[in-house]
Image 1 (tube, rainbow, N blue to C red):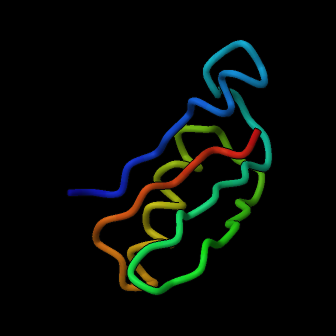
Image 2: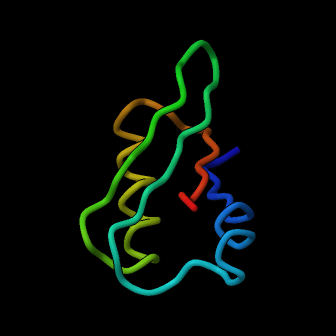
Length: 71
């Protein structure tokens, strides 16, 4: 498995897929005894934010994770 980004909650709240530039928030789901965690990015495009947050989660030692885009 890989680090997957789930957008369903964002799309439900906003009526469209995430895109554009801004400060993005992601939630790493709780797994393997770890608590859920919010991760906030600096201002960047959604595509850049996805790459940034994947690197951040890998740096924490996770190879498999589900991230949810903040609604």
